[in-house]
Image (cartoon, rainbow, N blue to C red):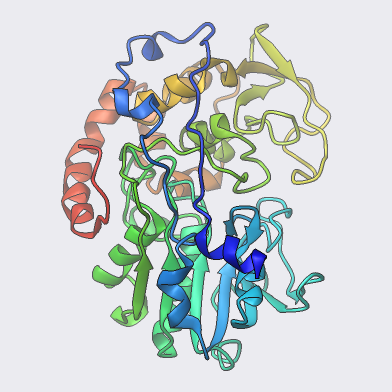
Length: 412
């Protein structure tokens, strides 16, 4: 009874990102004016959707429940699945996204279906042979619950998994409940809009790189804009957060994937992930993934690192090679969050000074960018200002669509 009491009534407290003393910064990051709301701790803690068990428990009782979740689906320190089983909810199956149910698999690593050692529940991988639940896999399910912490970047694949889950639920007349969580990059919108011909699992929707929406809001947009196959719509229930808005600073209690270990990496990720489509290492296989940049042929004495194979980064890019480059973790969480736009400075600077421009952009770069225009602009020597300007009309149109689906006070 004691455990059940804590599950039902615990309110999740968090501490916002503390400002760090910034070290040597690029000029384009020195003049940032940081809104007070961005860096101050809120008066009241954010209450996630998952924490509000009393709001969704009646929707699950006497039902066969499927859970779409990974290691981030927690209430206090207890996993959602364990909490629901304690409350005698009939959880029959778990569906897991990229990185697996326990969140330990490498980026892009195929995840096999299995039996969870702790709960003995079947785990169906949605990052293995199929990325969409099959009709057969949903036969024993009467309602599905989705609870995964996202980071607000188009190429972070959890929203692609959500898309396919919504589609499968719609096709099988199964209601879907989304337990909403904060978007740590929900305080701005930026980047090129994805074009249809560059659609892939790392970008399925015509949205910018940073869309500024929670998973609940994004699910409403998918439904409302009829982006599911054949325009089907999902029977969708969003368990909204309390005390959250799009200026809320939120420190993730659990790292969302192996190579986003802290808030510095989470804030840098939307800007640095574009380097995954180049020869440049973003620090996979080091203690600072998505916080450093380097390559053996970069002419820099500022910082160096050597990627090594490790848990969460098996056979990383440039493994065993001394990479020279930059340690961006030194710029501090407050500065990165306060910038409120993608930072193209490093991409333009490294490309312009890289000795081997032929082949600098791999085939995945345009998939990450969602367009071929960014690559062409960089090759043509366009400035940051010119590139940003080219996005503005599309971003304006996207924001007009986006605001129809917002559940929380916006940043503008």
